[in-house]
Image (cartoon, helix red, strand yellow):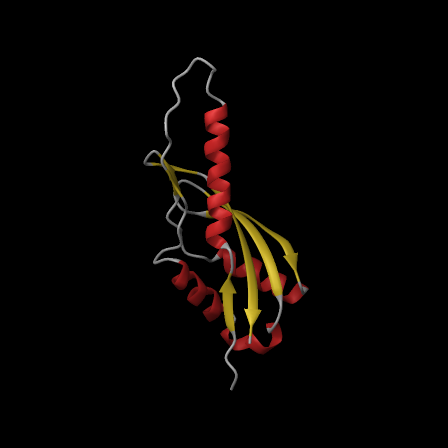
Length: 134
């Protein structure tokens, strides 16, 4: 039996790019005569890391993996300061069935570790490309 793996690609790059935008916006908001400070931004994390996220997503389609082989999707979602996921948007998806499955999965996803700014939890947005491979 062929095994299909669900891989979350570029999650780190998407989150880092977003964090850099946040930092740039915050620095640019400083008045011209103000002293600039370095901001410590911690990106949001799935509990136990990226590999655990891949395993979680793979387990969700284990019974229907052949239906989705080779399909791709791109999701965006927000993570609040408590780690709850909300505002789930399917930006791209190869099939309506996969779109429905992913939307349902992400509403039941465990809490994330929220992004932080100088040690304080903040809301953030994640863009997550997904490819289902043989």
